[in-house]
Length: 486
Ligand code: NAD
Image (cartoon, rainbow, N blue to C red; front, top):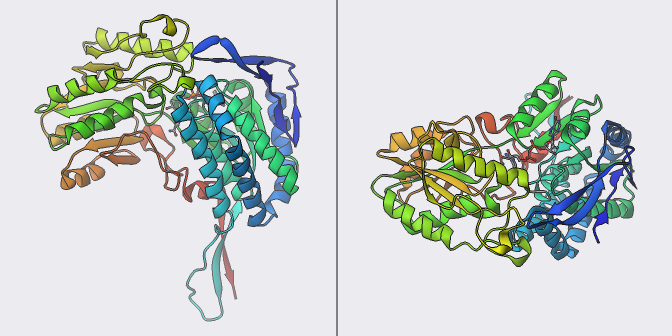
């Protein structure tokens, strides 16, 4: 039986004032309803922001130890339920059990990480210019943080926004995506139980479900929201950025990308194949850090492509709960979008080298399954080398010298993650300086992140002023005051 979830606003679970709900489905078998959730409205968003604003002063006055208790208690509760949460994630978003368990584990680590930093983060003492002076900085919370999140890491992304915001004394309003909201609604139960246990004021954490325009936009536009942190598509991110800056709000946008990996003539080909294959297929290519463009030296092009095809051909496709090599796409919309891009690639002259459609077989008939797809003869000006494809799809281009490889790698509007496969350390070092990307991976897949280091892109991938994750993730949610005292 699918469970019905309510919004969590002002310390209470409550139905939307619209009285409307919607169902979420299993992408491996869309006939299965996973959950029924609230189709909220601007009125619900307003209630949530007002609750967060009312709780803000009291929460900001708490010591770091209180923030630590909330985050640590939440992490512990998630950990106790990690298997069940991972299974929910498989059933609602389509990740494999291995990927889902990894993501749940990541959320636990994030809550513990910021729990420990909640007590050692703050201002700095500075050298003084006179004898009788204290010169130091303090960090104060921004106030109310509006968090707008996508579906593709539906537990890790809300966690990595919410934990640093709470750890620095902010109250939060989080709007989940309409796809795959259930796992974080379960995490919200962990937050709510811990908040009650430690006596946190009502309204510190508010979480609601519903559409972007109906609920997300009113949060971004509300006068009492001081900082907005958004992850999602470029179109929405650019619009939110404009709205927020017009209203002098702090804004952080993490958006899409079109990540390249250069495979140098100095690469270990076997290792390069694993790195690129993993970057294309992990989480069914539905990551902002997925490898979408592969730029291969002409001298090893054919051998590399042959081995890459063997690699993707060995990936077993199936429902996430069976823990195959790759699960389905999240929705029919995303599947259709990938299939359209595959067709466009061929119309524009790329050569289909592997995949290209849905896998054959009765077991794949209902779900949103897709084959890993590789096209060769990809040119930089083709649509599929410029626009983000949120599926297991990559275009392979060939290059003759290093400068050409860098030119192709940089020839996009985006700039999140760039990789190079090479055993030449000098070449790798030069690549770090030459590419316009916020993250550079050397002999590692473009996807995959560590939580204690800054994360963010350049150009159209991110608003570059602030980074997420690590201590930089806390900087975003705070304001510095400089104190001179004689
Ligand atoms: P999306 O932009 O469609 O939606 C993201 C969130 O914004 C959702 O909660 C949505 O309801 C909300 N939203 C939509 N319109 C809105 C509006 N007018 N006002 C306020 N909120 C609104 O993105 P998606 O399809 O959920 O996610 C996929 C995208 O996210 C991809 O482009 C991917 O690259 C990107 N992404 C980026 C990162 C990163 O850190 N760079 C990480 C994961 C995903």
